[in-house]
Structure formats: C-alpha cells, structure tokens
Image (cartoon, rainbow, N blue to C red; front, side, top):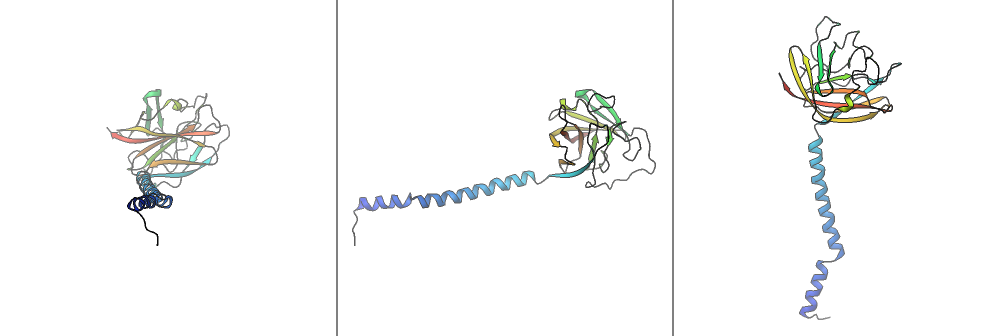
Length: 217
C-alpha cells in the first residue's frame, strides 16, 4: 500500500476536483439549465404571436398580390343591405393618405378601383379582429398604397368607422415572397389593422404592415 504525505493528498484532491470529466459534467448541466430558461422565456414571450396563412389570387395587369383569408373568425353581424358607398375611411397622416373603403361584399370592393377590404377580415369594432386592406403601389391612378414604404414602426394610422375614430400604431413591418401564400403575424389578443401592398422597387415580394389598436375616440 502506498502512503501519501499531506501535501500529496491535498494535491490529489485538487486534481480530482478539477478533473476534465467533472468540469465537463458541470458545464453540461449548466448549459441544459440555461437553455431551459432561455427557451421558456422565448416561448412565453411568443406564445401570443400567431399567424394566418392566406392564399393569393392574382389578377391580370395587377402589380399587387390580392389575398383572400379563410382562417380568421368572421362571426360579426353584417347588415342585410350591401352598399356601394364608402363605409369607412383609412387615414395615414405621414404619407397624406385619406381613402375610403367599402363593404367587403360590395362589387366595387376591388383593388383596381378602390382599396380592397380582404374577404374574411373584420371591421374595427370587432374585438381582437383584424381589418386587412390591400392596395396597389406603382404609378397608376389607383396606386393608393404607393407611399406605404415610407412608414416605420410606431407610425400612426386612423380608421373612421361608424362615427368612431380607431387609432392604430404600427408594430411590425415585414416582407413576404410572392409564392402563393402570405403569412400575417399578429397578436391574437389585440385588435389589429393589416395593410398589404407590393414592395417598393421589388417585384418579387410584398410588404405587410401590422398595426395595433391603441385608442378609440
């Protein structure tokens, strides 16, 4: 049996304490714990963020992708009579835009004539709903969304509807490729306004602007 001096025993204890396998084990445990908390926080912060996929319908001589949406709840009550007159107005002060929009069932609710209220979207008085409006960009007389590219996060948009003013602030701007589907990323606990048009100087993508309701006057 080999005998150790006190100095040798202390040295061996230090070697055991600092052995590579022990350090690796402790590091792995810390990594797993850290990864768990990071993942948990991310999931918690993102769990309210969901998306709708919409299928695109393309029209000849159109520079904007027209979208139709079937996945958003549309349980709101609609009047029996369909009018071809404006039922509300979209105003974006930064780009000096004020333009009316029609009942989504109207035959004049057409992107080549007006702003298009996308089928399946909700009007502003629908709590946690999503009013989706598409418009042309370009040089034509009907390019109502041509200047949307100037908008930034926190810019304001207003919707006047049924004698009330709905005030929205932009919270997200992103591009989507023109591949036949378009994803709308929004918080389903919020009442939102979504604006869609072709991306400025890019024929391959469309830009989506998500705005959340912040006040009603």
